[in-house]
Image (cartoon, rainbow, N blue to C red; front, side, top):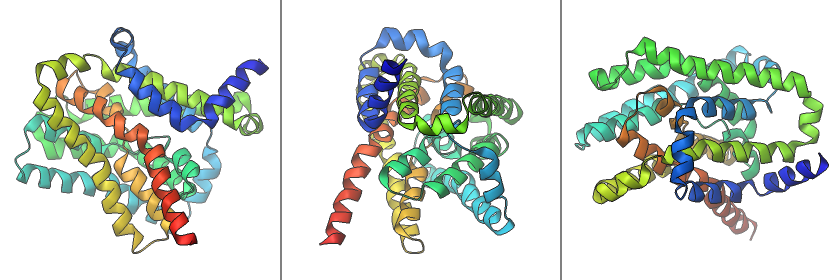
Length: 316
């Protein structure tokens, strides 16, 4: 048992590299991708469970439940999942983006931040408490907000009605949250905190397992439509890095750097895989979400270096 904990702790301490290497390996494992693809929705639940088990949800609810704090968080959450997708939809539509790629953008930006956003913020020295509160709130309200906004923006292009999509998203988030609460009670918060690095190792493995089925059929699409794939990858980079830069610059003028950095990370890194699991198979959205993992899982390495360089420059 101690050997297992030691290995998991070793992986957890190198979580940035595990995620980066894992997403590269995922592109080279087509057989495993095909095997895991039917289990994408349960893997979404597992990622939610492992990530949220680290969180003291009752304490979080008490802290975030103060009227002024809750109002501020609600404004951030609505900006994240309502205002941002509307702006992106309007801009991309005006630019003449094809409907399948436009839909992929909307599904991405109605999604909540990745559940590991607080851990990434903690790893990078950003405002992890704010990231934790906003990620949890945005995730819990998303079944009621995200599908409605997607339907309003995309209309008949959404292959499911808003109620059906709401139910699918709510089931994944609800089961993941309930499983996280049960796991936290089973293990105890003290044990989870004591073996935090081992838990980070488990989280890294689970995220890699979730990423692998996203690459099912990836090379077939790339080989058949290379220029379309290249354009989709460029779109993904813009969708991930663009909001991070815009939010870092915009929030940076009105908020402290740690909070602005946390907001930037959450704005650019969304749980788009949740919508891929909830919607019927779509090769364009599947290709988009597969590509999306590359900048997302390299964020800790790239952003970590950027922040280190900035802190070093300030320290001179």
